[in-house]
Image (cartoon, helix red, strand yellow):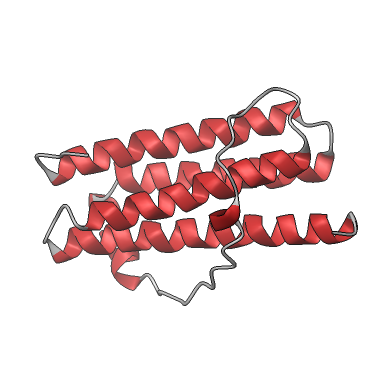
Length: 153
């Protein structure tokens, strides 16, 4: 990833957030289970919020300044899973695995993008996004653990 400006970094991040929202929206449409659909739709909305934040950085400066960072534990479930490609009719388990990997990759991406700038404000924006993606990853890993426990695994 080679970027000439912070605007290019933000443009790239916006596209990634759009892709993530589309993934969750499409996956939600494919499932017949209401609870699963609801969780996926929530994730799509979260990704849309990130997109909006990035598109409106100037008007979100105050919220970014007041953002409270918290330690988000990493269960590392996705670290031990292979990458999957989305397919229609995927099982709930596979959708969760795929979603966890996507959030893991988004977290890594935002960590890498921080290295592309030395501007403290820009770094903070990317750290906020790291935190948000870490929350998503934890949420999905918890769903996965709960689901697998119900299956007796």
